[in-house]
Length: 200
Image 1 (tube, rainbow, N blue to C red):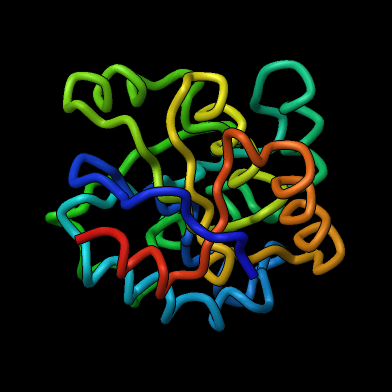
Image 2 (spheres, helix red, strand yellow):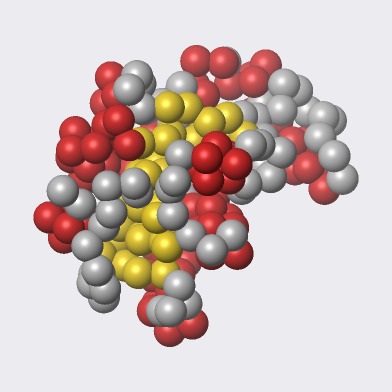
């Protein structure tokens, strides 16, 4: 459960839905077993604020051996998840979310963080965005990178606790506890129902 919101969510906030893609929901080596459980929660938030939603997609290397530095070894280890093995269609958003683009927008990234190698921060700043409502997968990998990058950049960050998933329950639980214990000044946590009520 979340600790709750400090204030109402402004109209200028953006829902950042991280990597809720077919390759994490469907039967692949990276399947996140409870992604299907959180999908209806994310859909509810998208239905409320589709035009204020940005979906990130993690784009794998085309083939093993590609990548810079440690990413080269990473894609050799996960050769089954490269585009040539996986198929480009598995990079698409999970089927229940595809209907929200447009008006929702897509942001493709090749690393965990949406802030590296993209103009995401500049686009948000030009639009007057100062608050991010974060959902998606996985709690302890790409969501974590998204949250900590947003904190460093000074955004108000709201993590929707019942709209996150991970393939590791203990890591998920530790991350939520970490937000409460170490990042309480910069990261708020709340359930989707509270977020919807506070974001009118």
